[in-house]
Image (tube, rainbow, N blue to C red; front, side, top):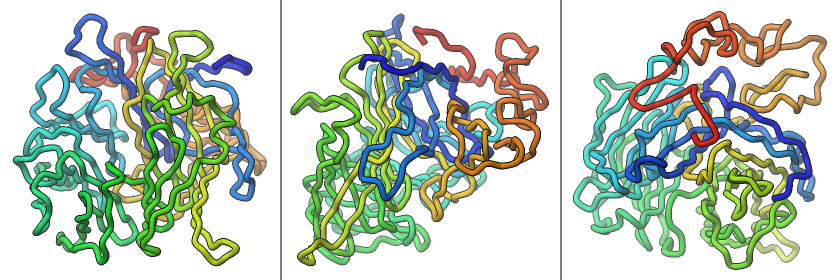
Length: 447
């Protein structure tokens, strides 16, 4: 991509409920000194897409310039194949037993309200590979990935001591579906759909019982976790080259397929070329987020280029009374992580404690951006449309200063209140340096 705009260099911040919702994603590149290690980096970007309109069918780029991002965490303690998730204010990383390193099945987690306390590790029941994760009702569920183990295990961070518990499969479930599962989080009904080919069950997380899906569906054309919208009734998957979306509606009991209109206006796509990584996840009941890595580097540099698009999805009645599905890009952003040939791994919407379970709840209106304040995750160049009579900090909600000058949050270098990292007198990390191979502060062009 040729640079026709401006470049903003920004260090992303660790997710925190005080800063509102954000989108977290991870990248990796092979360690230059040890082929058995991956360098994994964590980034956060704003949840809000400024300037989009649900009534506008034209693509509206909310930020046409490229932001070069610095990570909020860098580590060699994880494999690229691990899974990112969150429960309330905690971030979770579930290891996979894949790659050149041997993993015993570890669940890593950290409380984002106290990042200075570092990461904790909890053994899983068994190592898993190509597993899928779902968060619901304040618990983390891990499905599949081991033929000789329970279909799933669940982790409740509120239990003491914190341990994983087995979740056995329903009766008549295939004995070898562990690497070809389809799952969907049906949040309004507190149920998780789990399917393999034409066998589908739903797990009631409140009663802890399995129920067979009330109608037959052939899910063999899709795989993995669905992006759920339309009040938990429509399940969506993206093709490998992002040319189209495939949707199954549980109420209408039928499949839909549609290209993503407007995608060609924000990026160039090689015909019949599968993208390096293409991630689809829900933002609210009417919008999905598509995050993918471009095939070319940014402006002839060593920096990878990531696209982030907000897609309005709708199922409606056509002129002849038939049900139709439509997907349109309504906003987009561009990012370039500051590192050499970084590859996109996965992404997750961090909602914090305002929506229990770390997944979509009700009333997703995004972070409240007061007039002329800087977003806790954004570059600060965009402002809200409503003008307030004073500056208002997004962290503490007090007037008189903006988020960048707020002293009500801990310093990300030492963890002490009353100053920011730029004014910190601690040299070499201090309490905020993390542990166990996690580096929250240092970064360079080579990671």
